[in-house]
Amino acid sequence: MKQRVIILCLVASLAVLIACQAGGTNTTADTASNANTNAAKPATSTAVDKAGTIEEIRNLLAQHDKALSEKNLDNVMATFSTDPKTVVLGTGAEERWVGPEEIKAAYTEILKDYDPGTMQCNCDWKTGGADEAGTMAWLAATCACKDAKGGKAREYKLNVSSTVEKQNGQWRFVSLHMSNAFTPPVTK
Image (cartoon, rainbow, N blue to C red; front, side, top):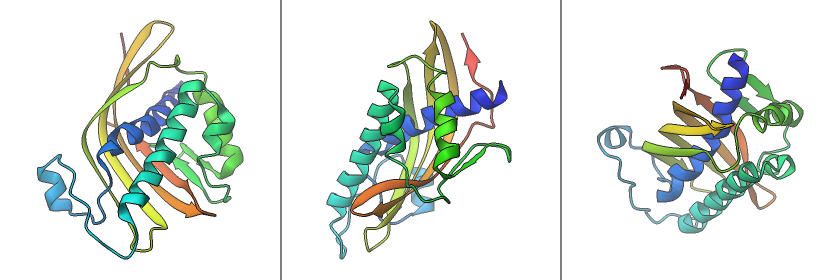
């Protein structure tokens, strides 16, 4: 049961990233500033097209969200790197899925744990950044989420972080980490 709850949180965490990054990613991480404000920083000019990079990452997040909503496992997996070191982490040491086969197995279970169109997340803190070359980026958020299965609503809070890498001209998740250590999901 615990692993099913964690897997459910993984689904929500990716939906959270999509919802939370709608304001864009910061190109630098200013921890002190982010601790004091929820506003996204404006993009600054660099050697790469930051607006284009942000839009491409948003497209990756939207692709993942659509695949989850449709419960399309192949399209979900298309958002992840095929590198055998690609990893998805949960809160505990036993909550680790490394490589496409383990990640696909985790998502196979995830798709059983919620009803389509029921996930909603409100992120009260978010941040992110990208390298100067425009080939690596990171995202992070703290969010309150809810979903439902069979008419039973659930609420939970998540911390989510992810690393994405541009591979063969396409952004792909190379790591995803979510945790919900504060309280377990509440079933209503």
